[in-house]
Image (tube, rainbow, N blue to C red):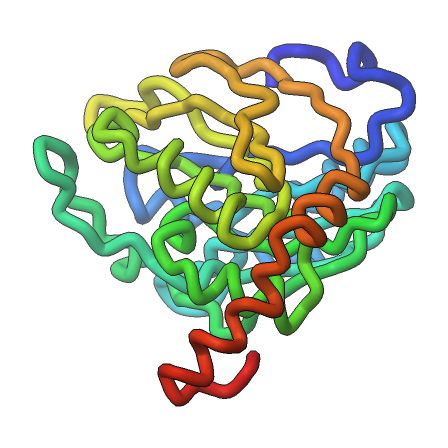
Length: 258
């Protein structure tokens, strides 16, 4: 971000950064070469210092060494003391031939994760950790809401420009917020990174009713600031009790209640 952290309101509780916020290389070889284990990572140490200096919870992303010629695409959440609260390794890898765009094969250099991850971030919020392409798999978000008690999702991303321009980014984000009646914080890489890679941008925050309450521009790398209200989550869920209504549909499909 271009704005110094000291310009954020003094009572800010959490900072969300995009996918590959530590490093986005031109080649997969560059990405794997700079990957480190979390326990000894100089990137993690720097973010620990920032968390303690500003008394902030921080969500950031880096590539974590997985051994051999591959890495994990990892999201880390630190508390205000700089301690690791959660680590999520991206489950759904982006192996796609984008129409009118690049061919991206994330699995060539990335090992997929196997676990869903959530953590308490204070203020009556339970954060569900997801990353970019995960956005296209609604069952993941539903499992985090109904099995983990999540009411806030992080979606750090480096969304491709063609899919963003087709409306996928905002449509999918709002859908995940509406169907799970939860806040979405989607911090996104923006602009051109190299000759072959350009990200859509449009970082946004969406409330549990599906309203976009903060958004940055297509190439804007500023900090969007927003107050999140847990009482709004409660109100939306009480007035439209999807958690109760879904049981009827799941029973009709022969699924269990969860």
